[in-house]
Length: 206
Image (cartoon, rainbow, N blue to C red):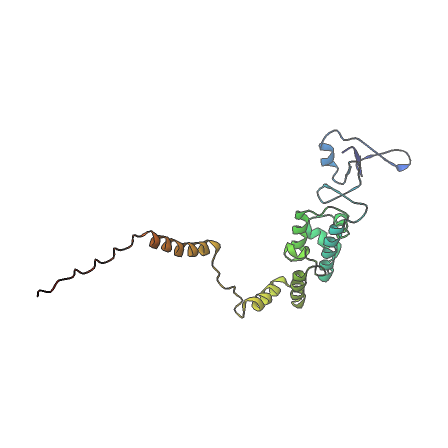
C-alpha cells in the first residue's frame, strides 16, 4: 500500500489530485472512500476493502458472475439492489458479474442469500453438467422456487411420500457381516463330540 487517492487526498494546481503517503491507520478511518493502490488496479467493496481486479475476465469467475447476473435478472432485481442485499458496493458487484475480481466463498454465500437460493445454485452450469441441467429444469418449472423444486424432485425419486427409504449405515453393515463370521469361527473352534463306542459282541453258548 503506497498511495492514497480520493476525496481526502490533497489537490495541487489545476484541481489535480495530489498523491499523499499514509502514515497511520487513522487517516483511513477519516477517509472511508479512499482507494488503496498497491501497484495494481483494484476495486473496493463496502467497508473500504480493496479487492484485486483483473483487466480481462477469468473463465471460471466469468461463468459464476454470469450465473449471478442471470438469477438476478430472473428475479427482476437491479444491480444496486443485489449489491445492497449482499453487503457489497455496486461497482464491486458489477465486477463480480463480469468476472473481473476474485470471487470468494463469502461473496458466493452473500449473493446466494440475497437471491434467495442455496449457494450451490450459483455454481451450477446446466450447459456443461447433466445433473445441474436436471436440477435447473426442476427449479425453472417451479418458478425458480428451490424449495418447491426440491419437493417435486423428492417425489420423483422417493415416491409419493417424498421420503428416502431407510438404508443401513456402513457400521451396521459391518456388524451384520461380522456376526455370521464370528458364529462360524466359534463353531469351528468347538471340539468335536467323541464317536460312540462300538457295541461289544457276545458269544453264544453251545
